Amino acid sequence: MADNFDGFSVNLFQDEDGDWLAHLVEMPGISAFADTPAAALAELTIAWEAAKESYRAHNEPVPVAPARKEYSGQFNVRIDKRLHRRLAMEAGRAGISMNALVAQKLAQDSPRL
Image (cartoon, rainbow, N blue to C red):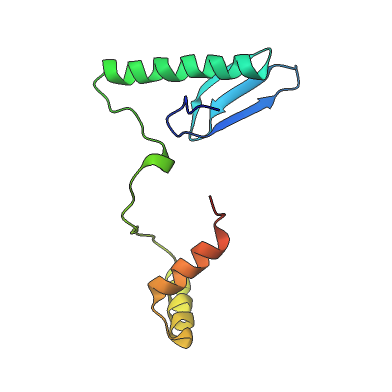
């Protein structure tokens, strides 16, 4: 399928009434429905193009899909001080930095794309 959605993920499913619904996963407000999957995707393309036009008309930036963004590799997370202590102790026992420990734990629990 061509990337009509600028890198955004699409969820396409049939509802209990038999209609096909499509929406951008990262922007669920951008959605469409139709009688067939192909028609629902075509309607979603129209909805996404209209949304982009609206952003531009209001001098707002068009959202960028997470898959297309550049990331620094850094983010801050606030956690409970007891968890912070446990992670620091675990990292110390493993002989690695807490950053390395947390990165390992996140990598284990994150699906590969």
